[in-house]
Figure (cartoon, rainbow, N blue to C red):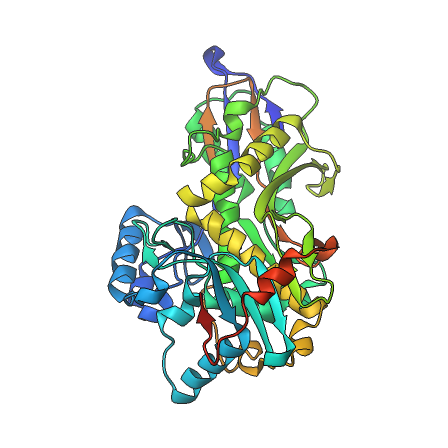
Length: 456
């Protein structure tokens, strides 16, 4: 955040909240894609064009997406359409099912693409005698909601998708080096230009003209992704959730739940001495310590949610940024409110639920690799792990987004915020492990059933 004291014309007090505008979804070109691509094209109500520029999807595009996806959605099998607390997915069975469709040159059925409606992974269970690893968690049937999101028929929570699981497993070892992350940031050159631009202002003048000048001066903001392919659905979820968080924080759109105010409603811009501070928010997984059985064949993930975090960066004269390790109290308050309301928010805005799913899949991938669970089970997964045999859907990689600004009448200074991201340190989430009896009890109830790749 930068606060620039600017004389107000006619005693008008203004606060300018500048944030990055960034999201992915259905563009006009997307309407011409195949039905298989349509199933994962839209994320969080955003669109990305062929050149990598990200923007909000308009209402017509969102409605078109909903119609197209609903038309192409296959009927959910009756045995999958019920909500259950313990749906099981066999990795050995999933491998065999994928290999069968690949060998036959067939497209994948929805039941495979949507992992039998699995919505969370609570247990990872190893069966050496069956050469299998089983993922267990709640699941239900699925439907397309009014905005084109694929959600559960009873809970409204997003279902997990095969593409995200494949990306999580294939990048797990690589993600050990620095984690998976997404960041949307102004360029140092843009920040340097902005400082010079604001330094020449002697009055706020016409607010809309000044805001337009700020946007043009700062220029496009850069989208960076680490340790996850930028062209995947997984990457789009990270970017879309980050963008949505910024738009909610800076008041570019109303929160879909009443209990979450925007940051601009909460802050006071009258405090001096903050002319070079930039608050940034980012989202990270938050779990209780992982439980495991005494023999290491059963693992339980607990308390799965997402935490909003914040820190102030210091903006130097040349436009570079340095971390302070401290959080602005009001920015921290907003982050705490978002964390507290995250579960409710993820139902009202499914991209946040999709983000939690991706984070959980990344943690499961890290667990499988760190503990060598497939090797312990004697479970070989050549099709699942080979991107050349089962390819995930590919989309234009997000590269930049135009700067966007808004004006509200509060305080006497300008407040500019333009940074943040998503960080998934999946391996770090496995540092706290406790031995307990509950994982073994779940393992006793979830043994593989023949050649089935899923069962209740």
